[in-house]
Length: 74
Image (cartoon, helix red, strand yellow):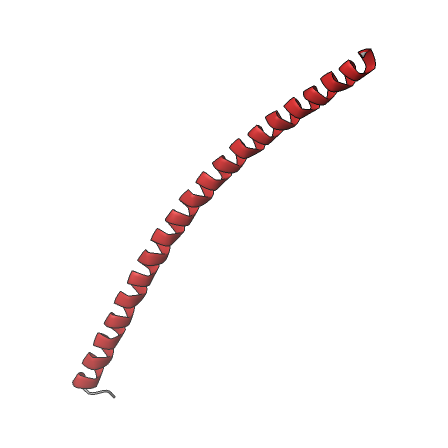
């Protein structure tokens, strides 16, 4: 059997360990929230860039078609 002092010491150590674990869980939760927010922002930015890229591609294709038409008519 453990003496009351040893049991008290072990209980205090477990309590400290639990506090550290809870702090760690809190930090990880905040980091996870922040990373999810960043991921959403990056996905939105990527969608915007893809749309702009598609617009630029369409404009270049239209210019090429106009140049070909001018070349054929000239």
